[in-house]
Length: 178
Image (cartoon, rainbow, N blue to C red; front, side, top):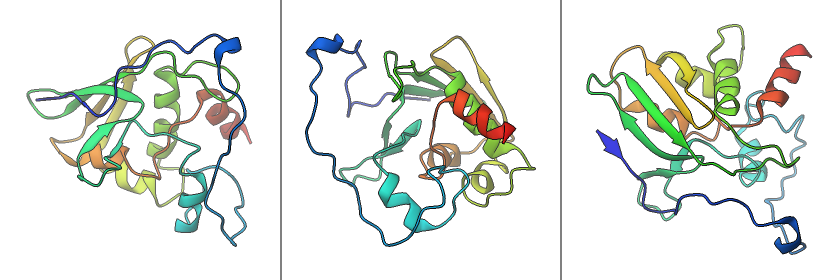
C-alpha cells in the first residue's frame, strides 16, 4: 500500500539568504508552567506540548484541518511493504535546522533510537513505539525504513505523536553524552 500526501507540495531548495524574509511575529502558547527543558523526549507533562508545537516536526502528522487523516510533515511519502511490516519514508530535501544544517535521515534515526532504547525511561513516545518497532534503518540521506515487530497500522499514529518529535542527530548524540 502507498500513501502519497496531497496536502503539501514537495520541498524545494530554500531561497538565497538575501531573498529570505526576516522579521515578523512568532506567536507561541503561553504557559504558567516552567519547562525544565525544551526536550520533547525527556519531558512528560502535556503542558509541554502547546508551547513547543511550532518548534519541532514529526515524520507525519494528523491533518491540521481536522480530517483525522495522516499527512506529510518531514516525510514526503511513505510506503508499506506487502507483508505489512516495513514502512519506508521518503524525506523532504532542503529542510534546514535553526543553525543552517540540513535535515537528513540520520536526524530521524537518532531520536527514534533514543525513544526505542529500553534504558531511556520516558513513558511517552518510547512507550508507544517500543512494542511496535523492531528496527530503524537509513538508505541514503532521504529515506528511512522502520521495521515493525508485526504488521500494524498503528505505526503512523505512533510517529505522528507530539512525543515523537524529530530533531538534529548531533543534539541527540550530545544529549546522550550528558
